[in-house]
Length: 344
Ligand code: CP3
Image (cartoon, rainbow, N blue to C red):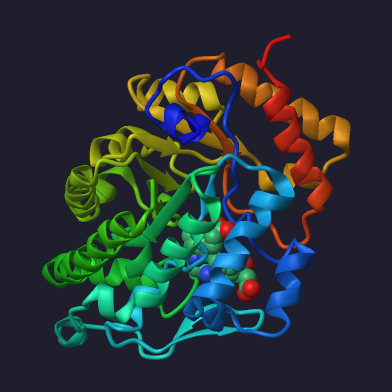
């Protein structure tokens, strides 16, 4: 088994070079993905382990990233809970029967993840087998808040009015919903580790919509309970959110060996706030991949300089790769990060 710079950095151990991978590294910007996607829907790919495994491996082969991330979606667990999920073209995810009140929350079904999400776990096993220890495999799930935001809003939202109406108006029901979601999320993540996932990322993508006070009251207890449960798995955990510059101390308090940050805060400032006793992941603006090569490289170097060679930096974007991104730019970032600090 080769020592993984990704797993070592997640544990803040010194590594010969900074590890790099990308959120949404498998996706539409890659011709290999589009070829499969032209024949199968997103949900079909997720439901067929041989396809999901193939897509998971595409960026590992094409880009030489230091981690593979399971190809799946954070929304899959809501289907066995009883929600009708669709990915409508141009609309993103849509839930036709969103949760509105205490009655809807009570009706959400408990999930046996080994049974209902068997295809996700089979993908983990297939990918682990194919990677054969060369590149570590990252499992993932949505955080309780971000999953709740889709379940309540019925899709993407800008203002999160339905979410806030529920959590301000009926906090008891809100907490009941987050507890139910956190249970399934925790079960799924632990099952991914049993199937072979070597690290876990929890995506709280939309949590930046909350003030620190609201995060502390309505979200932190559930995210903390989740991370406490994950600690038993013995693999490094990454806690990621967008727009979290004012929440970083609280994300740290909730848990995660690594805190993932976006580009709206300089990496060194973010690391100060998180504390140097945690690792940090980030934080190139995904739009920088559209900049001229020299400007892109300058921005990559700025981030590496801000990390300052301190153990515990994992290079990534501040959010997922955008669909029109030039593959050569992504590849250039991998090469530049790999060349940096690797010595003569
Ligand atoms: O390569 C990887 O990162 C692994 C695969 C992955 C997908 N979704 C596949 C996918 C991961 C890690 C996710 C997580 C996910 N899904 C998140 C958290 C990360 C984030 O971006 O904040 C969220 C919020 C979702 C929900 C979701 N799924 C949205 C909002 C969308 C539509 C957005 C879009 O770009 O169209 C999806 C669809 C989705 N999930 C795609 C992919 C590759 C889009 C591509 C397609 O339709 O083929």
